[in-house]
Length: 362
Figure (tube, rainbow, N blue to C red):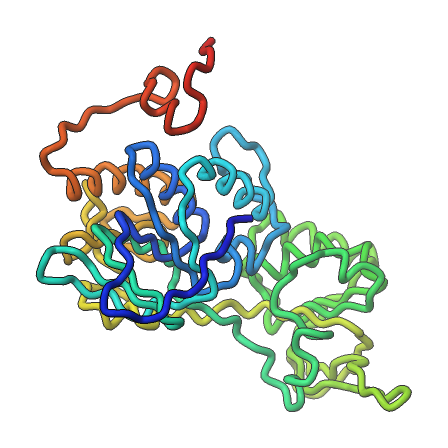
């Protein structure tokens, strides 16, 4: 893992930085690499205390199948590989800090300030903040707060934590279906709760879930959680299950559980990004498709945070955007420098930057 820099105290003179990247998800991490290949250094800031964005925070063990040359790759594995790839370029990481201000200066540089007092003077800024700040939609039941993070969870960090448990999963999207299929047979018992007979998840996953129900390996309840059920043992109050209300409105079930997973999606919020004077369209930053520059010169946006005609919210699309943004940033910072395309397989300059100078090519 990268070393997190200490928060700088607010001072009259911010720390100079060639490029500041906001967001340490997969696209932000790849931006370090693309900038490094072109000889530029980066500071990278994230509000989370660890790198990886949603990949690490929400689904670290979830498989990803559409990364080129990797037929299957775990979400956390992808982050680890991207960190290793970016390692030669020695980016400075500022984690656990929310960017509160991005303000162009009269000299053409951009002031970036964070919630902990870090102040950077950047030649260019890349916003790779995904959907912005996000919080999971919570299970709205009286008294649930006492059990959140203990027996009630909104994400899976380690699947083994749910093995051998009496488990209830709530939700109708991909996360709920994926974890239902993955944990069925490993949990002691598993009940899936969804409001409707129709599911928003991938058809193949839904079909597999219905097979597991038909085989008696799990239970499906069409309804919603109405209340929590608890028991007290040795002076400690524990979650013992949920009270479920079925869709007919007349049947109430009490289902035993010592772990509950609720997947109701996220509340995406732009947060301070909406106040930085950048042109928005449907809560996304408008960019061009040549430079991926926003409406403010020197400020770029890549990944899920941006929008343009034909935009597809895919990690691999974000990688493409990072590559083109790097060339645009190089021209922005060094307009007098002649640009030409080099290849890592043959360029001595790039191989030296990567630390593989003199390596044999085959």
